[in-house]
Image (tube, rainbow, N blue to C red; front, side):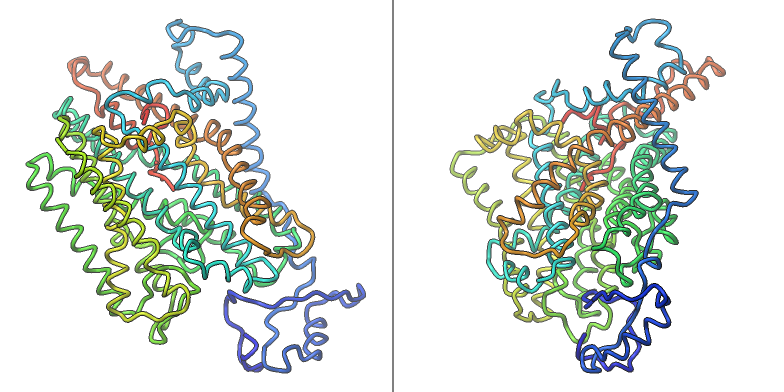
Length: 586
């Protein structure tokens, strides 16, 4: 930045900026006057332009009409939750009581914080034989990986006063676990495809006609969107209209160059198109995942339906789509000179003119991200349709476990040279970019396969502990709100942020952020995710029952969508990171 010509125009956004504050008399509280004053200081010996001068009043955020609407709605939900909790706790009415069967009472009880929290924390049925035991453990550690990665990058690389010293920890090989936290997101894409296919084919085996009906396919999409959106929309509204009035009044964030994209672009989030429309100025940066995940979900019937025709047909179609994604990945690297990873501090090719294109065409792109999603769907189909335990001798089991860990380690650690400054050829970048995610997916596939069929040993025992069940169920809400916690906690400091060592960072910020995220996500999930999931189920059942009453001839017809499919599509896969936390006891 200091090597820039002072007469050159300022860029739209500066990733790294030098800022300083001065005290002036109140009579100088005018941006134009201040610009003249600070320009005369010749900061940077004339090499760096002064891009912006703002007064504290210019930078303050104030509540508006949207703020009070959001606060009012959240207050109504909170009151409903408390009153419904008292109803459930003190009356303890049976669900079979005629009074409790009334539609208005059932809708009212959806918002019971007491009941919803009890159901989230319940571990009943978690160890049934047809359950995928490690699923919740994988979710929990994946979301923690995401939180740690975002925390380190934002707090110590973006906000600290010594980012270069903070970056030095990334020069150590073990730190590649932090540098490549991106694989946590791939894990959630994998889990999303796995659980969708596993539950969908379970429903297909129960009632093929019902699962393949037109009504079922319509509700396949409708329920997904209706159950995914309330909790997500509330986070967007809360962040846009409430949270930013706190955040941008904190000294650490009162900077002229702090981007404010939500006031104009929050509506794009509601359409799940943040990865395409104004992708350079996304509101709530982590929301790209939900857009990409839903876009992939829309096309999953292209794989589900061929498997209903024949397994071979299904594998061929899935393989072709997987190959197409891989080829597009390789071609994009050669065409646009992209880096092998989204890690922005690695060496960049001078021929790459715009890193934002990497975000659009690679990192957020559903045609790239579907690679590992397809792998999850294939595994989900196999687990559901092959109930007989395959015979694997001990030696082969150990070899496959070793290969699994080796593939995952290679995906994470083989980028070390590039992240520490060694330039890679286009071929090396293309190979890593196109094959690292499949390698990670193969490792995950064996872990789940082995644990499902009883070859996991102590690993399966650990990953199937009941403590992971409620933590895994909270992963979606934790993903949604963790960014607020990550930004708010360091903003509470009134002084500079300094990085000393990882242990200090872990105790000072990372552990508190993780604990607070899961604490708040418990109530967020109970109030919005679970409550509105129940509400959607009740309303859909009510509508279908009225339709049957008007058409008695259809009263014996199957429900338009099986309960297993409701469970599988009711939540985002996670990180989704996403399945119904009340019914999908995995």
